[in-house]
Amino acid sequence: MPGLTILGTGSYSPPFALTNEMLESIVETSGEWITLRTGIAERKIAAETESTLSMATAAALKAIGNIDKASIGLVVCATITPDYITPSLSCLLQRDLELREDILAIDINCACSGYVTALKTAHSLLADMPGRVALILGCEMLTRITDYTDRTTCILFGDGAGAAVIRRDSDGEFSFDSGAKGSVEMLACKAQYISNNPFMPRPLDLVPAGITMNGQEVFRFAIETCSESVKRTLAGAGVDIGSVEHFIFHQANRRIIDGIVRKLGISTERCLINIATHGNTSSATCAIALDDLFRSGKVKRGDKIIMSAFGGGLTYATAYFVQNREI
Image (cartoon, rainbow, N blue to C red; front, top):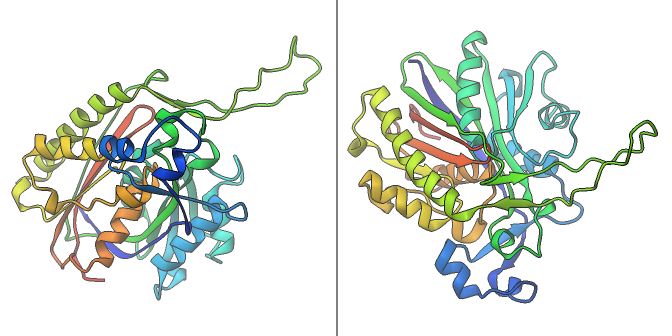
């Protein structure tokens, strides 16, 4: 299968950090317990003046860098927290980044698996766009939908955005695996609707925004599906796991990452782990981690990279590619 190469990466995290010690003042918990159970020490929270769009724009500009904007033929945004139902986040980015109008701009909702799925979406769509590249993003403002009276979820989530510019290469390598298991019991966030339609028998009940989760079930689902998905992805590419230089897993819980690592028989030294300072930013976690990996200077031309995530839906997705250039 034609390959995928990263041309540029970027990310944005709000400056304000909500520490575990701060959470002790609003819910019955302790900073030590949070760190022990999740691996999170702090998470970033967007200011009142910030938006999903502003964070996405900041990340995108870093990713684009000196790349010719005229070469961008596709924008794919993974998010569950757009500022509007419509216009889409991707369309607003086309405007604010002053991209050409004859492009395809789409948003996708696969929750925390969104950025990995965006890689596959862009890789497939670029087949019909010779000479063009794609801007893909994962961006979330989860703190706007988090219930800060629920100690099981409010300790986890933060805000942030990550972006990459990618191209499809005829001589590279790419493999992908995904799946879905529909469930609202294990992980969900119900939309809130307000209606003053006089023909309705009664007004719609207002449902407070908030993420609900069965942590133990998600924990088991994540370790099993991600580890098996990685194996299938590498098998599809004919690649031995021992030859992969870099692994990026969804940064939801450090114990989940450790569980996946044990099942795969790899070392954490080959994994980019930044959950301690970012928390769970849903579709943005893999995007931010990818930027951190490339900016670390550890990625060399020819390196093999695996990215795997799980999320609400339930969904999971894994992508494998070889980086064919240094950036």
